[in-house]
Length: 176
Image: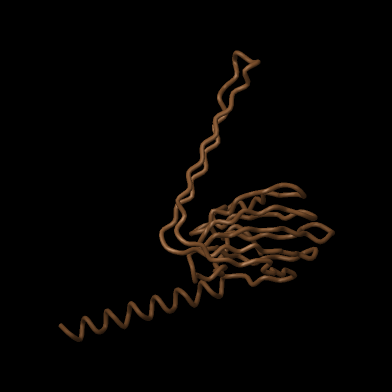
């Protein structure tokens, strides 16, 4: 009985170790990409709820526009403001984050690929556009597929002490 249990434990350890090793081999490293922390801060629990309702009084058929923002955390969080730069052909490598990111393109363009998109179809963001990376299990890569330098400013909120970036395996549909 003990021998069977020991074999099962050893087998589980070998499988878990092999799985993490293979995943690390499938992850693509960043290349032609730099990320610089402009500001880092720690904040306690957050409990914010906003709601704004507006209506155009001059239009009888106007629909109400509702904007609702909710941010709640338990425990401390780390807030990062990052400046990211890609040379032409640069890539962030496939990765995820433990929390969400708000990303604004300030120069050039970035192509965002999703880890669960087997068609490997990018969404391209250009100067002035902002997008959200939800983090968690959302694996992605950002690439500069243009001829000029691309830049973004990113604001990230993650659990206190967590790694800001976690390398991950990419989409099986993408050849890079």
